[in-house]
Image 1 (tube, helix red, strand yellow):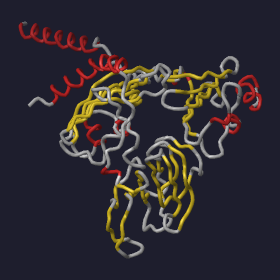
Image 2: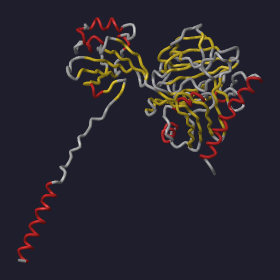
Image 3: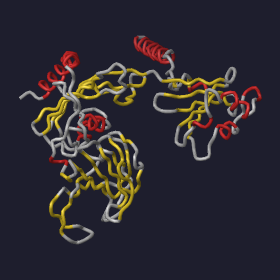
Image 4: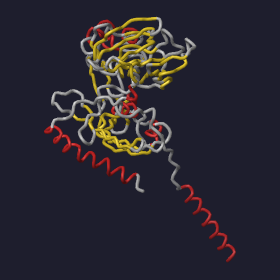
Length: 412
C-alpha cells in the first residue's frame, strides 16, 4: 500500500511540473524599428529618398524628366513657376541634392532639395501646389577660449587643441603685419577667444569671429583685439593692448605662403647669368599662379615686360616709397591704376631671368633700393585720445580673460 501511495505521489509531481512548463509564456521577438531620419523639414522614412550630386551637363529639366510630376505638370511649366525663387542656372557641379519620391508610386516626385552649402538649402515642393522655399538650418554660436603651446606646425597645434586648423589662416591674417607665421617655433604660446558656429547645436560649421587673441613669439607679447573706430566701418581693424594699430603701411611680404629663396645682398652669384653681382631684392619662392599682393596702397607706375624682369609691376606709394614685383606669369593691373594694400596685382611665374617660379620683391626708399626686412616701416595712424579711452575700457575684460586662461594653462 505504501509503495502504491509513493508511486501516486511521484506521478502527481511529474504532471504538475509538465503543466508549469506548458504554461510558460512564449519568447517575444523584438522587432527592430527603422531609425527615424529627419532633415530639411522631411521625415525620410515617409518617402523613397534618392541622394545625388549635380554632374556636368545636369540641369533641372533633365532631373525632372526622369520622374513623373504630380497633377500632370510639364517640366517647362515647373521651371517657369519656380524661376523667380530658384534660378535654374544657380545649380553648380558637385553640389548635392535629394529627391523625395512617393512610396506608393516610386516614380512620382514629391520634392527636390538642393543643398547650397552646409547651412542653406532650397526646396522645390510638389506636394500641394508647386512652390519654392529657400531655407537655413538652425545655427547657434558658442564662445570658447583656446590656449596651447606650439608643437609641430601651427595648424597641427590648433587641431590637437580641438580647434579648426582653418583658424590658422584667420590668425595669420590678424598678425600679418607683426608676426611671420613661417617662423613660429616650438615653445611659442597662444591664446584665442573665438565664436564658433554650430548647425543644429551639434555639427561644427567653423569660426564665426575672433574676439581677442594673444601670442608669445620669441619671448615677445602680441595682443590683438578687433575694433571699429567708426560706426559705419564695415570691417574692424586690429589693435594691441595699448591701442596701437597692428596694421602698418606695408605688408611683411607680397605672398600669403612662401619661403625666402634669396635675400637682399650686395654680392650674390646669379643663377642664370653665372656671375657675381648685387641682388637688390628679396626672392619669395612659390608655386606658379600663386597670387601676388601689393604690400601697400598706391598707383601703378609701370606694368610690362623686360628681358631681365620678365612680367613686372612697379607701384609708387607716396613721395618716399615704391615697390616692384618681378617674374610674374600674369599681370592683373594697368599703368596708372590705383591699387589698395593686399590687392592681387599678378600671379607668380618664372618669366625673364629666373630659374624657377618666384617673385622678386624690390623696395625703394627715397629713390634708393633697400632691404625692407631691415627697415622699421611706418605703422597706421594712432588713435585719438577719446577713442583710445573707450577702446581700453572695451578690451579690459577681454584681456583679463586671455591672461587668466594663459595663467591657468601654463602654471609654473
